[in-house]
Length: 479
Image 1 (tube, rainbow, N blue to C red):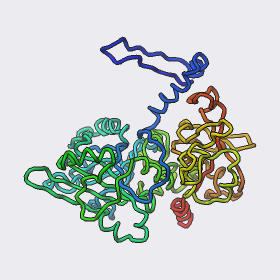
Image 2 (cartoon, rainbow, N blue to C red):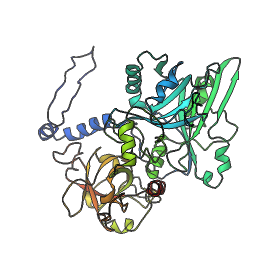
Image 3 (cartoon, one colour):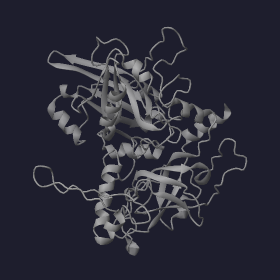
């Protein structure tokens, strides 16, 4: 039983009180309450802000990521502390009395619990704002905005007597961007000219204007990360226009970047590539690194020595069987089975609503207004809604995580929803071409999280295995 909590008014104006009750009971007493609870649930279940579904994916774009924040970890013991708590390796060379610190601009990693569960997925960059600091003295941790304070408290709790300072940076001090261009696939030199670099510009009247760029290692052709440090040193008029995506951000790079686009297009690109991000998709203290594909996305160095959560992670890599993984999924309605049958790739199937218009066209965005069914989108599927197999009973085939339009991410049982054969399994996979799966709108039994009229309604769901993940799993089998 989950409890609903409502604060009626801000403190200081009226009396603030809390009501705890079963969501199902409250829903039966008030027909308007299910929709209220849905909005309440979504406000706290997602780590990134909700965005309107785009009409179509963008082949190129530069998105400012309000869903990501930076944490500064700076001091003589910063590198030593991080080496003991993250899955990546700050000293990737062979063991030696004087190990060499990695020299790249940044990398992808994760913080784990002692039981090997994901706490936070992070990008870690060298902090270049103070050139007087020696290598390894200062770092910037990019984390989910909603989790920034949690990670800061976690670091403070376990730093003990280590000599470093930690604080969450204000957005005025640093901004996170993501850039992509499908043309970079055929022109890798253009990407190489701006990726994994640090650019510094300065003048006598403003602080140093630093740009850090990093190829996103999580999936091929996903794009590059850009950090703009000290963005306040640019003109106010240009900075203001950036927030509304009306003008190019003030990034002092010699190479032209793609045009600015809304952040929603970045998240859509992640979903189509099958890349989870943040604790709405890599559930805090629940997801294993392998289930979130962190092993395939370069976040874990399995040759590294001791770090928090290493024992279970290394055991899973070498002796365990990973039966569930986060996969990109397509949501579709009854009667659309022929459109997805035999399709092996998700690209080209995106629509802003489930059952509305042609693939990636945005036409007719109504999605089933005929038959009085109304609009349905991935946002209407509650987080962690169970996925079932059509015509068969048994354990859940997976759990929905998050999405937009008619695509999203789900934690799927590989042997049930895909043709992937698990290591050591001689009986093959339980999946057969033509198997169908459904997820319920409103979250099941008591209409929890349902909108008015959606209780008991289902949409079909199909999982896809991205080529990069399939290749990573195949390479594991060959070792």
